[in-house]
Length: 181
Ligand code: HQG
Image 1 (cartoon, helix red, strand yellow):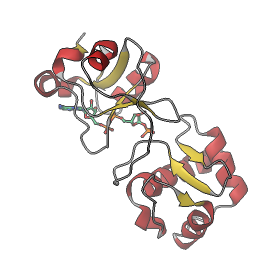
Image 2 (cartoon, rainbow, N blue to C red):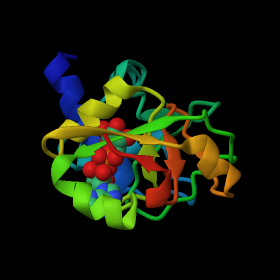
Image 3 (cartoon, rainbow, N blue to C red):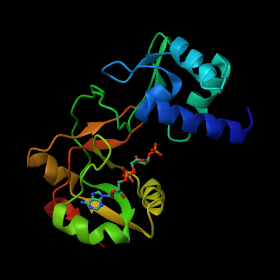
Image 4 (cartoon, rainbow, N blue to C red):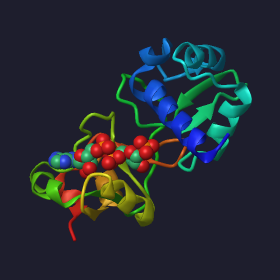
């Protein structure tokens, strides 16, 4: 597969495994899984035929490791980022002292008042790395980096989850745990 084909396929997989499974006529189980067989058949029906080898390549080379196979290789899901109702079943974990969130300057007034909200997604996404975070912010406008006092927030009783691909997930971040630049 060419890099362009890989990107196009990855975007389609994100669409059907996170947001609109009906586009490939598939259903996701409560934890977000579908069978590889159903997915490949669905991709073909949607006019985007994909071989198992190509699917494996997309999953293995995806820069953000967005997708995962079940241990026996028969099922696949997105590791995070859903808008459809799923319970990914991650166990709560202790976060590092500081985590980061990239956003756009135009959202700052609202974030100062409301804190970080999950918007269309299931969780607010936080990262342990500042570089990725600035790229995430730049998708929405002029990027700005927020530092999250994750250790304090955890002590105050907020649950933190970590997805298989290393994204930290929380219900919300109240303003008192956000350091603005
Ligand atoms: C902002 C990518 C106003 C929030 C990345 C963000 C990530 C508020 C936007 C994943 C707000 C939501 C998620 C408030 C939050 N007022 N704006 N109170 N609270 N916002 O796309 O974090 O490529 O849903 O700051 O790596 O940008 O999809 O979230 O700017 O992990 O695999 O509302 O997307 O991963 O935008 O990105 P999003 P996000 P993938």
